[in-house]
Length: 115
Length: 114
Image 1 (cartoon, helix red, strand yellow):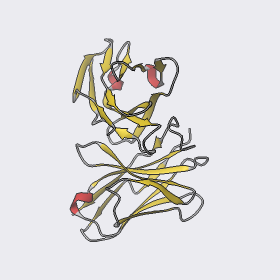
Image 2 (spheres, chains in turn blue, yellow):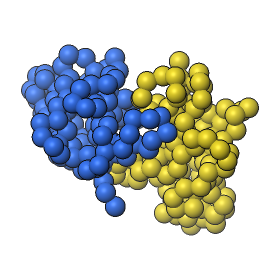
Image 3 (spheres, one colour):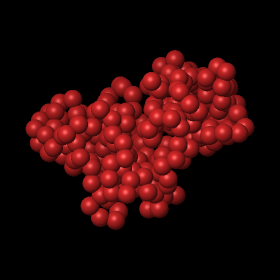
């Protein structure tokens, strides 16, 4: 069964450093997403991406965050200058289409620990 | 504002007994409702969804959920629980009026004892 894959599974970084989280969405999917889950809290939407541009973003997704599809398969989330409060599990996800009823499939997540 | 409530932090059931994990929602417009499961150290796995039509939807691993518009609920159920069902369960909603974001509840930990 096709799945969303994410790397790294866990990353520890120093405050102020740049981090790039990588994802390979399901191959025939057109919509890509990043969500995050701070330990013990809800899963929160960060950004959605379609046709090489951001289609929606939350208030969490400020100027320190960026997303990119550098090639035909990868989808990345960059955090420019990490803060302690960025420590969370980051989930990449994809869906075949963007319609509301389409299922969003998630990867296994990347744990980011900022020290 | 859209929101999803999972009123129970934890549900405990004995193996073989029926289980229910509760979810209520508050949205403007028609809801599209989803259940996901998260096993320890794993990602979010899709279980089932309600889009339209029959209020009772069936999904993976023998789970089902009933959409109740008047009570704005979408409770997850299974007739006979297994120890392997122990996990964290998330209810989520999208609407046709808001953006494309999937809004999650805080999650309910299901613990099935043998």
